[in-house]
Each structure stands twice: as structure tokens, then as C-alpha cells.
Amino acid sequence: MGRRLVREGTAASPGIVIGPAHVVAWERPRVPHQAITDDQVEAEVARFREAREATRLRIQEIQAETSERLGSIEAQIFEPQLMMLEDSDLIRDVEAYIGENHISAARALEIRMLEFQSEWRQTGHPMVMDRLNDLLDLEARLIRQLLGTGDPDGVLGGITEPVILVGRDFAPSLTVQLDPTRVLGLATDAGTRTSHSAIIARALGIPAVVGLTDLAREVEEGDELVLDGRVGTVIVLPTEEERRIYRARDVRVREWEQELVLLAHLEPVTPDRQPVLLRANIDLPGEAKTAKEHGAQGIGLLRTEFLVIGRRSPPDEEGQYQAYKRVAESFRNQAVLIRTFDVGGDKFPHFLQMPPEENPYLGWRAIRMCLDMPELFRTQLRALLRSTVHGDVRIMLPMISAVEELRATRRMLEEEEDRLNADGIPFNPGYKLGIMIETPAAALTAAEMTRYADFFSIGTNDLTQYVLAIDRNNAKLSSRFTSFHPAVLRLMASTAAVGREAGLEVSICGELAASPLGVYLLLGLGITALSVGPSALPEVKKVVRSVPATDARARVSQALEAPDTATVMAILEEGISHWLDLSLFSGRWNLSESE
Image (cartoon, rainbow, N blue to C red; front, top):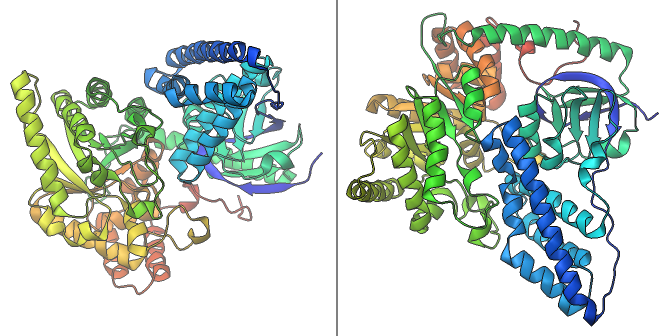
């Protein structure tokens, strides 16, 4: 048996489970350095082509199984791997390495994949790193085909009793095959909440914690684990007291979640009758169903990057239209805010072939990139316009920093409207165009923006990053990254005031709206349209239905005068504690507390 450990990672799929560890070494086989002769080159190239075809067929099988089990949109997770198999650079280079260097197909593939990995790792962006796991998944399958070592799906064989899987990471093609009756939870050293494996785990209802760094090396087969996918904690060889605490918490959380389920069909209105709009942030169209089940009153942010990240060619108009239409039809009588491509800087689609930038968050990204690539942008705008006939679809522009960007987009939309009219293609001419307030420039010129925008949506994550000059992904600075900083509060307050004066809806779609204290703050700022991840909606509604808006406004008026973050939070915590028990909400549990 190993030793007792407590590891904190990222909560990726909710749930508390206790069970034995099953350590999975999901890795590609070691590739021997094998030289070949001139007369073997043609046969080795043929073997590479056969391996590609066999791998393509197996991935298509898994994709079909995923579509039947989870849905067609979730099955799109495997599209990047299928496109990579047809990538001309990959095919040409591997075949060239075989012929020019007289090495085996497996060795040539390994070298080319290492080059791909090096290019992708330079960005360091979580979204790109998530796609790296897809690349490694594909590589493992190809190499096993070439070496004749069998299908990698076999590593999950032999699980007869319920276990918690522990590993460096789990490929999406393996995760999608998991049986929730035998796999209690997932604990991985790598990964993020937005990785394909994490998305699949949530769809399957399997609790998961990712980003645990080195847990797989520390855990021994059969070690008992406590895994809390709600807050991101894994305990190896827990004490009897810890078992008791987590079992009791599991009961409390389940009771709490049952209470939250009952709230799903109740109106989000404060005790003093202030109505609040609660919408959902989603990454994939298929998540609209989950959002609706959790009581969402529309979509406050549909991220469209799933259409471009990992692709070798730009998405076409029809494919985009079908994706947007699917979400719009899920919320026919409620608003669906669709954000245009927020790519560039540090998360380029493969088809752009751009070098890394020294300051990617300050670089060529989002609206800047879109306006500089009118063909890509116009295709998206046409698809968005077409989708407006299926519901209240609103177009939202990210990373606006100058009113000229908004005006330029308006002109492009007007031109695309004329083309649609000429082609006899319907759209709703009364659609709304809005902007995300994510830069200090946009917040400080909000009054000018109201002349051209129909709504504002404050992205608290990026706004905080730019106001504080702190990279939100820098772990060393995580304790300093807070949206409760007085400077961030004052910019949000001024933006909300400008919007109200102009008669524009001002909403929030950043992580701030997913915390009880954040909801209390936003109610106090007079912001009553909030958008969060679907799983956070019930808790947000609980806060809304528990806290009087008048009380929040009184406390926030004090907080706006506070000199520092600590004072801001003390004021807010004192206020909200009169109405709610914060220990029940998602967050770090205090193991010393009495139950």
C-alpha cells in the first residue's frame, strides 16, 4: 500500500465517490529504431497507409457509438482526429521520412508527431493543450497499428468491480467507452475542465478531478481514494474520520442538489421581487439540452471555437448554420447570445498557420483577427444571420476595444443582409448585435459604444486580467487574480450605469457570476442578467431566491468605496452570511469543520 496523500486539482465533473484505485498506464508502445533498405521503402509506405485506413475506420466506429450514446454534437469531438489522418503535411512528411531516412513507418510517424507536439506546446494555452491530448490519442492508435500491438481500448479490459481510474490522462476515444456502473470516478495528472475527456465524463455522469500533476506515480493499485469532483480534491488512503466526513458530505450535497432540482422550475426572483434572468454558457450545441434541464432561460454565451480549433480548413456556412440553428430551436422564445470566433493570439486554428506571439493575450485575436480575415468572418456572419429565423439569436462580438471595430462589423452585416435578400434566403432583420466588455478601453468608452451596440455582456475573466495586468492562467499569481478588486468593481459599476441609462441590457457571462459572493455583488450593482455553466445554474438561482436585492445594493454601495480587495470581500461576506450558509456551495471544504 502507498502513503496517505491529499491532492488538489481542477473539479471537472461533479460528485463524491470513495473506492479502490485502478491505475491505467495509457501510453503508446515504445517505438524501436528500425532501419530499412531501399527495397523495403515502398512496402513500409504501404503499411503506413494501411494503418491510417484501419485507424480511420476504428475512430469512425467510436464516433458512431458516441453519437448513439451521447449525441451527434458530442461525436464531433472526433472530427479533429479524422481530419488529422487526412492532413497532407502529415502524410507527405511521414512518407518522405520513410524514404529519405530509411526508417520504419512507426519511427517516421513518431518523429513527425513530436514536431507537431513541439509546435502546439509553445502556445501553452489550455485549449490548445486540450487538443494535444487528441493528437496523442491518434498517435497511440496509429503506432499500435504499425507495431501490431493491438487496439489500445484493451487497457480498460478486466474491470470487474467498481473502481476509480487514475492515470496521466485519458484519451477521449477511451473515456467515451467507460461504463459508469464500473467506473466510479476519474483522476488524471493532466487535463482541464474543457478537455474532451472532461466533457465526456460530465456527459456520462462520472465524477472527475483533473490537473493533479503526479498522482498516478504516487498511487498504488487498489489504494482507497476519496474523490470529490465538486471541488477538485483527491485523498489517497483516507482516515476513517475523512471517510465519515465525505460520506456525510455526500449525503448533504445530494440533499442540497435535490433542493436545487426543485428550484429548476421556479422563477429566479429575489425575496423583494427583483426578477433575474439566468442563462447558460455552453461550448457545444449539444449542451443546450443540459442547460434547459438545469433551468436556463436562454443561452448567454455560445462559444463558437469548437467550429475551428483543431481544424485544417475553415468551417463552411452550412455547418455553422446547422449548429447555431440547433441551439436557437432549443430556446425558441428566449435569447441565445452567440459569440463570434474568439480565436487568434495563442489559440490559432491549424488552417491559419501563424507563429506564436510574445504577448498572445495582447495580440492578433478575436475581433481583430476576424476583421482582418473578412472571408472567414463573413461566412460566420451569414450563418448567424440565417439562424435568426429560428429564435431570438443575438450576435456578440468579443474583445472590442474601439468603436471602429463595432462600426466595421455593422457594415459587414448590412452587406451580408443585402446578399441574403438577393439570394432569397430569410433572416430576421430585427436581430440584435452586442459586444463583450472585456477590455478597460471598452468599459471606459461604453457611452460611445451604446450608439452602435444593442446590448453589453461583461466578460469578467478577461476584464479582470486586463485591468490587473495578471495572466489568469498563471498559477503563481492565482491568489492575486480576483474580480473583487476595487478597480474591477468600479469599471463594472460604471458599465452597468451607462447601459441602464441607454436602455441596454447589461449581462455577465464570466466566472464571477457562478459564485455566491459574485451573484450578491452583481445584484448589488443592478446587473440582473447572469450567464453561467449549466451545472452552476441551480446554485445561482438559490442565491437569487435567498438574497434581497435591496440588501445587496446597500452592501455593494459600501464595497465600492473600499480601498482594497480584502475590505470588499469582508463587506460582501458579512452581508450574504445573513441569508445563506456558504458551506453548502461548490468550493473548498474545510476538513476541520464539525458536521
